[in-house]
Image (cartoon, rainbow, N blue to C red; front, side, top):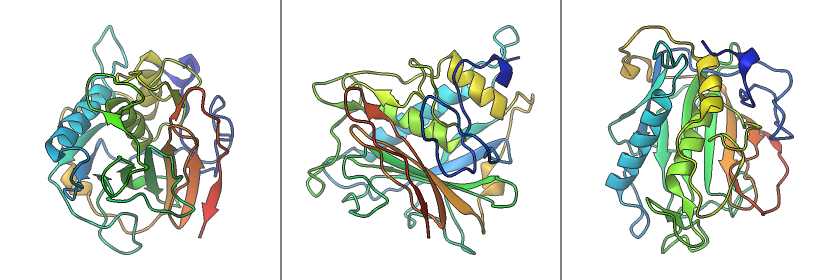
Length: 279
């Protein structure tokens, strides 16, 4: 079975406020992870017209989840990670994490990319992961996609299937962000889904051996084939961690306590600096 000592370049997200160099794993802190064998994500059905059809987003998000779940921990035994993401019913809920409230993990397309310190104007996506301060268990995640549309003209032009000129592959972005949802930081392996840079017109959708090593180290195979994410859908305390995927510069994150990671950036664009945010 694959283990941390055998890893090529994968890293885990920790409770430390930064991954200053995407080629070097975060130092110190506790690694974050989901405490159960599965977790549910919901699509926010309030998809702006002229962006991405809801059914297409559902299909591509589910496909990205399945690619991660199909990663091999032990090719000889056919063993897979002891964790999987599941896409459940659509929910129109506020973004973010609310202390003492009912929270749901979501994937959404805002009508406008918010102009604040938490969202880089040219970020392709933003993922915020909320974890319990006492044990680093992941409690909640929210993914925002910065899709170009009538009310968001400065958003990112995504391609849904075939690559196109000056377009960012949505499936690559979703696969990368779902890696962060599961607790992975950026990898030093250039071919990995979790590598921090991507060329426009370039696809990197399927987890590589390096990605699989990382996920299998976080969630070793258990032999348990079923899990009900609905049993673990409520969370009431914690602090936030985030990552942005950006064609040119990384964004920041929102949350009571936040960890900003360098996101997925187009090759050739400048690398932005990481920043930690507290509030």
